[in-house]
Image (cartoon, rainbow, N blue to C red; front, side):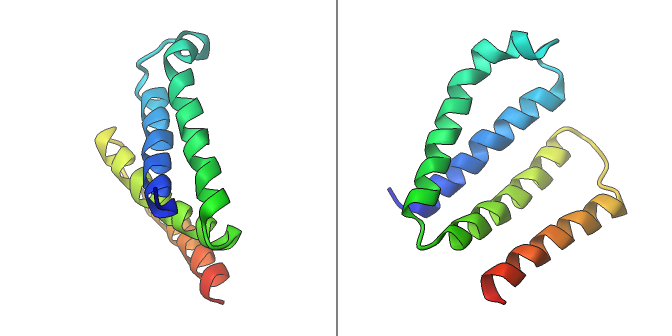
Amino acid sequence: MSWLLYSVLANLAFVGLEFVYRSGTFSTYWNALPFMLPVMLVANFLLFHVYRTSPSFLVGWAVLSFGNIICRFMTNWLLGEPLTGQMFFGIVLMAAGMFTIKFG
């Protein structure tokens, strides 16, 4: 499997975890842990393969980060939380930093 596909799947797994945590599906971390542990293990397995097989650490990091930004926008929208100007500016700065490292 391509490292790009590993990156997409890892992002979906991590953002899925964050969605469940933020949505209040479970009352405590300890209640969530038995259900979320398999997803955590799969997400870290995928992350391992992103960094192990990408052309370089920074390329893997940049692609993973860009995918994560997109997924977090989707999570924010699915949770019905407003996107403030400050949040948007922070995301833009993260993306700018990623591109600066990749192409600078």
